Length: 63
Image (cartoon, rainbow, N blue to C red; front, side):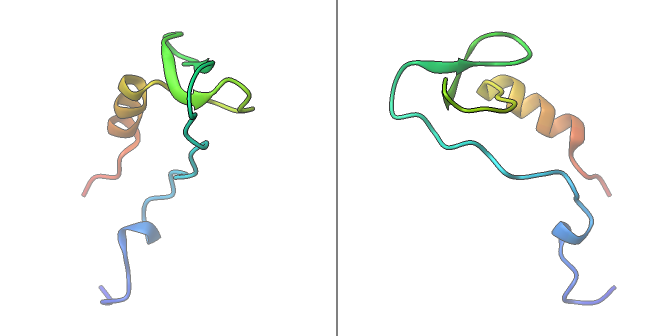
């Protein structure tokens, strides 16, 4: 394997995240409905820290 190959070359999971909210109102998690760290006005999928962690574990690259 070449030295210029990184994990990013293998892990294709998106790393884009919505901007953090300065304060309430917060968006609801799409999985458990708990408050997230993201603004309510953000359009897209938002996860609370717990669900975000679980999703990262589930989709992480192994090997």
